[in-house]
Image (cartoon, helix red, strand yellow):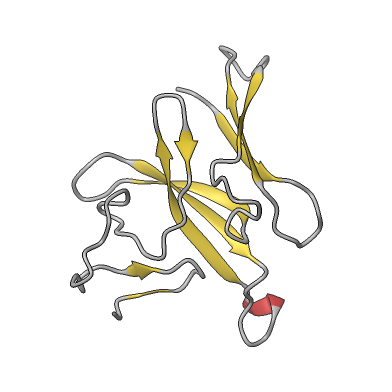
Length: 134
C-alpha cells in the first residue's frame, strides 16, 4: 500500500490550506515524502483543520476514506465548545487525491450527486450536522 499524510499549515485556530504528502519510499524508514499540494484547492480548506481520516466500507461498493475535520470558524451558540465538524469523502485518482466541497453526500455513493428528490439518505452538511431531514 501507499502511505499518505494530511495536515494543515500553522496559524493558530485560523483555517489554513491543507497539505497532502505521499510516501514514495518502500518503507517508512525512508518515506521520501512527495508534496501533493492542497487536495481541496481552497485557501481555508472549507474552514477546516484535519482531525482524522477513517476508512468506510459501504454495504455495496468499494471502500473509501472519509476526511474528518474541525470547523472552528462556525461554532454553535456557545462558540468553540460548540464547534462544528466537516466530514467529506476523499477521492483517490491515479496520481491525485481530491477533497471536494459538498453540502451533502451519500455514504453508499460518496462520489455521485444526490438527486434533489431523494429523502432516504442522511444529509451530511458541510457544517457537520447530519440528519435524515430534507
